[in-house]
Length: 203
Ligand code: MN
Image (cartoon, rainbow, N blue to C red; front, side):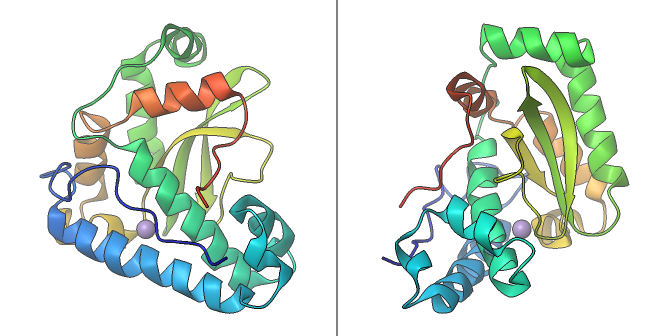
């Protein structure tokens, strides 16, 4: 069974003006859809057609760059849509305690997310992740993912230009400011932390 492009978990204007409906129409409706379609074309008639997306990603890593990039980008974008919300949600007590332990405060974590995102060279992803009970900020380049990494990803931010160019032109820091200050879904991060294992792409 082929993978489906997941629906956005909010209305297409819910993130505006940080991320506009026009950006989502391209980013979700064109970019994300293209990754799903290309992956489905690559796995049609193979055992991966019935596999979990996380298995496709892990199997293709290091052996099939084309399939890996499309499968990982399918996963990353779905995770990114859920990492944002129309209004910033609240972290659980457990997540808040772990943020305080690793970063000192939520505000300091936000400042570090912005700095890592702004400093990331070229295309990629910035993540809040958990491993062995401790939180850290991680970066992956291009289409790379934490889905099969040994980290439990909690949140991610897409720093490819297509994520912000319509709304913020070349000003990646303005996009990061707008998303990090008011659109992060800490409730989703809390669910991921509580589960203790990597979020699974719905199929
Ligand atoms: Mn993207």
